[in-house]
Image 1 (spheres, rainbow, N blue to C red):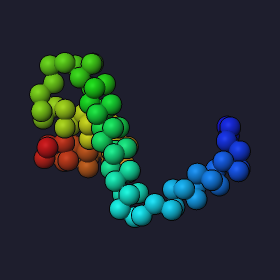
Image 2 (cartoon, rainbow, N blue to C red):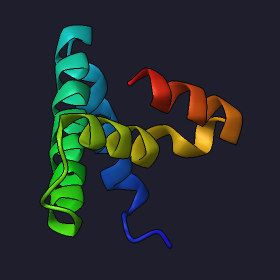
Image 3 (cartoon, rainbow, N blue to C red):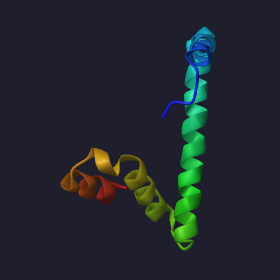
Image 4 (cartoon, rainbow, N blue to C red):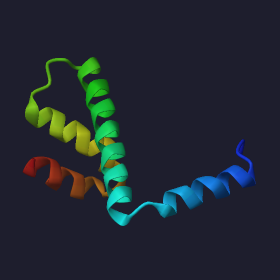
Length: 80
């Protein structure tokens, strides 16, 4: 589904590319930090008893769990 006109998409792209590399990097960092906080809130809502290690593991699985094989995930999770 696309609900944005080509004109607006072009305008948005020009504005984004007009920013410096540093500004774009900071925008990406801010978006990641927001996503991380939303995921952590979701994990805490499901299990408010989670400790720091459990949170790290759950966060890893939510963000990267599909990027690794089961064996790789087990190794990474045991290292956290």
